Image 1: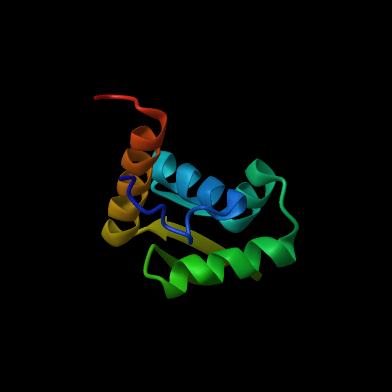
Image 2: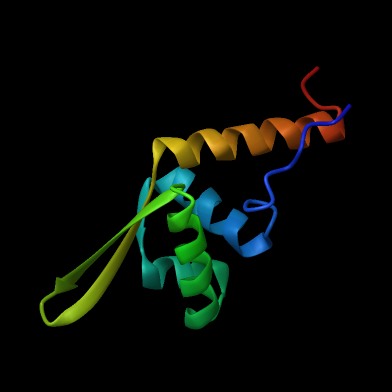
Length: 96
């Protein structure tokens, strides 16, 4: 029997955001947008979904007079990401 894949992480863009944050721990919105090649609107919606699930935390600050949004992965998000990767390995029969 195969484990369930987390539907929240099974979205290409949300998985890309989580992958970035796993490797960087935190990133500003423009960097994530550039790396994922997402539109600002779509990325914002997906970040809201990850934040609502407790997978990332979002800090809204200012750099000078410009708004700055910083995203950080949470311990819950890291665990969910690791569990997702393990589930994928099971599907692919890797690491047994």
